[in-house]
Length: 466
Image (cartoon, rainbow, N blue to C red; front, side, top):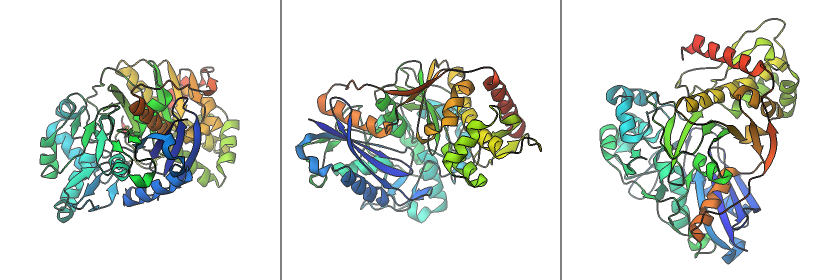
C-alpha cells in the first residue's frame, strides 16, 4: 500500500494525515497546536510539524510513503536574514496593523492598476502591505531582510531543505500576477525599497524536492503545496457550480474557475487555484469565533449555545448581529466592531442572542456568495466545511440564508487531504479519483431566510454605508 502525507499548517494548529494514495482513505493523523496571536515566530511551526508528523507515525511507515504535500495559511510575511533567521515575527493574514499601508497603496496606484499588475486590490491581509509596514516602522530590521517567504514555503524548506512556493500561494502576496505567472518586482521596489530573494513558483504538480532523511523515506517526493483554500478545493474535488463556504477561524467563500475574477472593488480576490486555473475568493475575519464569543458572553458551552440557537425563533425575533468583532476584511472595515440591532425587552433572550450570532456569520458569508454571483459565477450548490459546519443550528439555517441547496461533506481535514491529493498527483503523474462523502443535505425552507437577509443588508448599509 502506497501512502501520501498531507500537512495543514493553519492559524490554530498543524495537522498531518497519512493517506492511502489510491483511495484517499486516512490511515493515521497527528495534530499540534499553534500559539494564539497574529504575529508568530515561524520556528514554532517547525516544532509543531515535527510533533504532528510523529503523532501520525509517518517516520515508522518507511518506504510506504511515496510523497508529501504542505498546505498552509496564506499571506503571512516570513522575513529572513542572510542566514535564514527571522528578523521579526511572521505577520499573519489576520494581523491588520498594515491597514494604513494598504489604504495608501490603493490611493497611490488606483485599484485598476493593482488589478492589472496582480489581479488583487491591496488589503491589510496581503504580504506586500506587511512588508511596507516593516519598512516604515522597523527600518533597521527591514534592512536585514534577505529573503521573504510564506508559511507554506517555510515548511517546504523544513521538509526538503529548499524554499519553494506555488501559484496559489504566490497569488496572495500582492507582488505576483496569476495572469502572467510572474513576480512584480517594481511593486516591491516601490513599497519595500528593494527586491529580496523570493521562492521559485512551481507548477501544479511539479516536485519541490524529496524528503530530507530525518523525515522518513528520503525517496519520497514533496509536491509544490498550496494555500489552504486551494488545497481544500483539491481535497473536495470541487466541480463547476459548486461553491465552498468554509467556517473556521476565518470565513471563506470560493470556487474554481477557468476565468479569473476581475473586481475593481477588491471584494473578490483574484487568486490562483492549485490546478492551473483560478480561485475567486472572498474572506472574512469573523466566522466560528463569533459563535465562541457568543457562548462566552452567555456563559454557556458550545453545545448549549448551539441548542439555544437551534430552539430560538428562525429570525431571532428581529435581532440582527453585524459580526465584525475583530474588524473585517470583506467588507474592508479593519476598524469596525460588532453591532447588535433590534433589541427589545421581549426579544432580549439568550436563545435570540445565540441565534443572531449564528445568522450573523451566515449573512456575512452570504454577502460573499452575492459578490460571486455579481461576477458571473454560477452558484448552484454550497459545500459547507470547516469547524463551524459542525454546528447543527448553523447547518439547518444555511440553505435558507444562502438561497441554494447546501451539502455538508463528511467531516474530514480537507486542507490536509488536498495537500495529500496533490502529493499523490505529483508522485503518480495523474490526478487521483477520490470519492467525496456527504454527511447531510439541506434545502431552503420558507421565506424567513430572504427576510433575514434583507434585514441584515439594510443594517449593514445603515451602520457602515456598504
